[in-house]
Image (tube, rainbow, N blue to C red; front, side, top):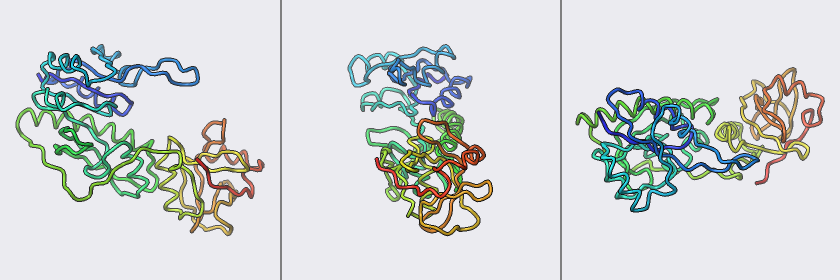
Length: 316
């Protein structure tokens, strides 16, 4: 049995936690996750997705404010771990902690390293127009996602791929890949390989400014931007001074006449002109409203935000 601890916080980490728990050769000693934080309009304490999952599996849960203390290090050492698995935990591990487990610390990272190290690899891959991404199992070291690679699994990206969809696909890929890799590592069947020095890119944190739509951009650029920031923060612009978030679009078969940003209704389609073509809006949301699919938008066709409206670029 491999004595294992798991450190993770958001929903993306949950499938890997479940995969570890289900494997008969892996013994989960503890689950580490971020402390409960205030959230929502009421600012009530909220448990992380990983904590909720760990509770449902009756696993021991540890929520330290920091792992940089001597007490945290000593506690981890008492577990006598074979490995610590880390998936979007949200805390930096000290060199001493990285060296504590017998097999080290393994990270499930949502990109094909060394491309898209850092905070937002899914969004930046879609935004950049990459035709593929994937999951990398990495042996952790002190640098930002710089550790040697144990395994990778590729996933294609199409024009219609959104971060919302890609998140769920990669989350499900990560669990089986991690367990397979962990067992092979313990058996001495694989050895980590250093990351290539070429092709390094950094996925910087998402800002509100990143999601501001400029309709003079090309339709290809706009599609990537809109799909990259679905669901959050949501690419946005303004329609008659009302903030409008757009979540999914596709190229329309016919380019309509008119300036960039002009919003049109053609039959049952809601269209908008870009800098070099016309896009069909498949899903959007008005300020204070719910996300609407195209059939629901058509029902609002007489509203001034649709017919002939000139969408203007958002400001952060």
